[in-house]
Image (cartoon, rainbow, N blue to C red; front, side, top):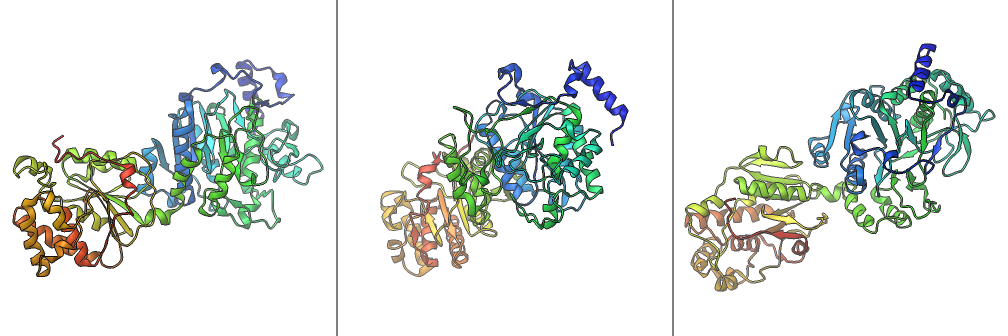
Length: 592
């Protein structure tokens, strides 16, 4: 219990800040819209830090969506600092996931803050909040559940605490006749206040009059007041006393990460009770945000959510709706809110992180040898940070800060610098320079994925790439739809004798040149079906044959021969979308 000295200190601090002691006897909470909403009444971006918890489970995808939403939709606050904390080190994020957060300019910490062993996962938010008050410099902390998303610019009001009431009565108390009133009284005793300090309000969904109980997944606190530390003190005292608000109810509550189990369900709402009481034990300057904030999407199937007149929804509380089986319901609900017309498309892009099977089946890869190509490859990877990447490069350290698999590679054939300094020029209808080493990037990508898609490093995505299932075998851009013989008649005819010799070497006859198709090499997808080892083996033989004869062009013909001999038909449709979303710089070897 907090002692008299602490209470006296609190009164002194309030007085020094110019507050009237009368407020302490007549608690009220400011409703959103009752204050001046001009710039003087709003917090600046530099004054706040967004604080979230993240772990190596469903929270990873949720965190990426939330942080992406801040950077895209949070307006004046879009560049504010975001700190993500894993408070149980055994559930710390992988290097790949950390890289994805880093790409969003999110600071990440893995700290041993929650060693309770309790299945009540909300303890994470409590301990992380207390840590943040002691360790972060910003004067205001915006505490968010990970299963949230901003969809328009918020207005964070300058107040000691900003909150939203709980959705349903749940663990709250309606007053002296409520069996839960004794639970709340004990928590107030721990905080050193009486129950009467808590104002009455109405829950937002079931509209029941209750003592102040605020949703813990969206709160803004003034750091120097220590509200989050006091929340921790109250909660852990209750934890030590085994004060479970819903004890014996035999509930199994479904949260954003799935059903939490009976034990965790008995604690449900206890963190919100601790927060609410902590706030009113310290301040009366409490700002209640309106219905634009913390919109509980999971219960809006048959409920019409009322927004202030001409107002846009700001902050969605998604709960479990981003999981694959609920995504269509998610989209249906947001379409009925007053949202940006581009929101459904953005959400569908974010859903890819919640569909790991789709993402894991496809890996992008490229070849980045020498600085000009490493620089371009970095840009390309940043265009699609949500998809796995393999980079074959002479300097893996150049990619250490990106969520990619960078593999050290010593070229087996000529690279751009060689074409620029010692090999006869290419282009001008002589045929493109050959980079057969790209096959090694694809082989590496297929080690952990079903499909490898090679893209030239001097390519850029102009639209979002959405991974999908690809047909088995080989797929190429439909830029050249000719047999090898037909193509060599009109482009780089000087290479024909070498290809005749190659075909005879591989098959005993040149007839295959009239059957095998030329494969444009800037975008190639290979999907496993058991024939890919033979394909890469033949491609390797073809590459060595041509390079020994100093024919450093005709890569598309070698690929086409390998595909035909392996038993594949060339698919021109599966990667056709890349013509629309991919821009290829081209122009031959680059020196800068």
